[in-house]
Image 1: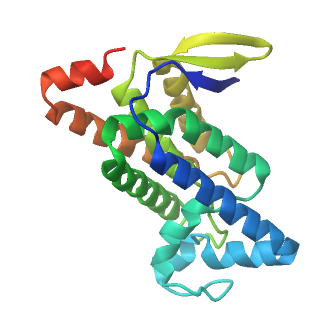
Image 2: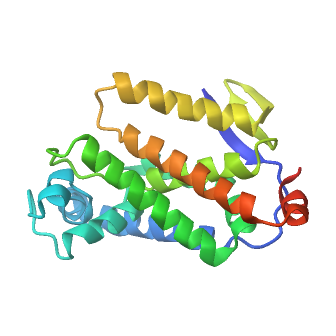
Length: 226
């Protein structure tokens, strides 16, 4: 298993939105954790995206204090545990800051939210009868991974493989990650939202490629040829 540590693509601006999203995710998790075990589960049930509720427009397990469809957004800033949060924030920081740098702040925010919502909807329609709340930023972050691959396919990523730190092309790191999601989606029976990961990655890749193709040739070369 490869654990990314750092990418070697230079940044040109402070990733203000990535920092804001990261702090928001951490803040929401800390708030939910301080509610205690029961409070944590109630909070998750109220603000997580529950497929049955999204599809049929009715509360399934707990009254939702916001319109049901807003849970497509609120669920993106919630996590089920420290490992879940830590893994997502690691990927957000390593890859998100370069995607924000390439796209600009406003476009990055739109990109992040669109990838996250579409990823969540993919999970919803993969199991529309489920009453298990979906939480996590992984769908949106999968979009960032797809966008990074589209913009920086030749970048080198420092990864930890067992006890070794290696420089590996982004195509192998992120392409391998995507293949794992495909394999798990067809074979795994856990509660991981594999289809959200797949959809987020594809949407992120397509959106970034469309944007790259619309940019002037000189600007594309200056920004992405590393």
